[in-house]
Length: 229
Image (cartoon, rainbow, N blue to C red; front, top):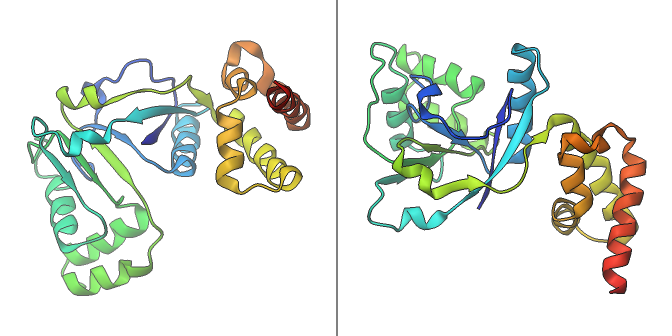
């Protein structure tokens, strides 16, 4: 599975010591399968540090969930068990890790969800009412790598991408869809597996400073050449 991490700096090596307490799934390194969510967080955290946010792409080896040497936990949706686990980890009365799982996967308790959790903890709403409110909440996703051992199941897939390079990708993908009559998944795959995108993601080339139309022309030339071979 391809997963993404948004930050204010390049992730050269995952350092679990930089993890924060009282997060959804406790201390750990967090990624998501949704690129857009990683981009949004990269912009937010980048702005806080007065830098351009970056998105790093990783390969997650899902066999971790069937490998008996790893202790894992998965939540498919906003369930009662998920809520209990979130409340356990977000308990600010302690800074200690509240579980011994290596990897945890499930939905995100974003700001909207957190406000509902506060209502639940203040006994303003019942657990059932809380879960009912989340029935139509936007689908979210995160994976937390909680132990050093768990980091064996994740590795960088390609070079770190600046938010600017990702923003350029959007009109390029839209143009591919229109010009080649392909769906979004195919268009996205063609862009992100191309040499043009590899150069775009590499800041040293300066390609990300060019207009997206010029980058799109380079991509079309690459695709045409590949088809002719």
